[in-house]
Length: 263
Image (cartoon, rainbow, N blue to C red; front, side, top):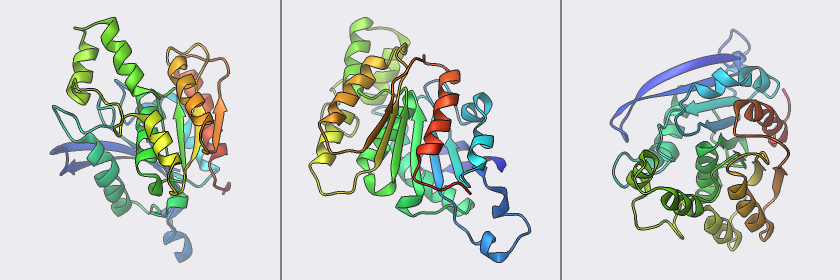
């Protein structure tokens, strides 16, 4: 496997952005032409609040774990954006869903087939993964949320009740505004129900959250909503906290769960 740090200019964000990419090394080594022309299945892996594109590789053995599966992993830096076109700020959602996949596939041998593409994330990144996959289900075969913010409506209401003036609430207001997000692209429980009531193909879902995690209540709300739908959901709600020790274990489970074969 190769670990590549890539910096490029984003037209959507009007700034330089970074991503780390784990790539099967045989994609560019001196081997036969068939290997050189291969397009690899891809996991878009999103970071949490206050983190960046380096955290997954710094805090887990992801490069080693992914080697057995012949999968590329794209880890972009999207600041504290909640993967959203901000009410007062940059269009991170547009960058994530349009520019990032296009640039990634231009630079690296990544498959654009739905059955070869997956999205996952931890904490804020779990929200981003579910938001991306539930809003644009024809892009991904599977979605995984690890300790994700799975009920943003509840999260915003609870945050505002706890304190009106703290920096976190100011940041959330810049992102989501103050008019509420019920029945919008950020309302994941509504998106679950909406997608379930259509004939669109549904991604596989994986949801994990430790019972000691402060987001456990969020995850139970999402889980119970999902139980009322026809989604294929795999869960892991055993002991664990909001820590990299927990996510290091769960990302291994995610790789095993993804609908791909070991290389």
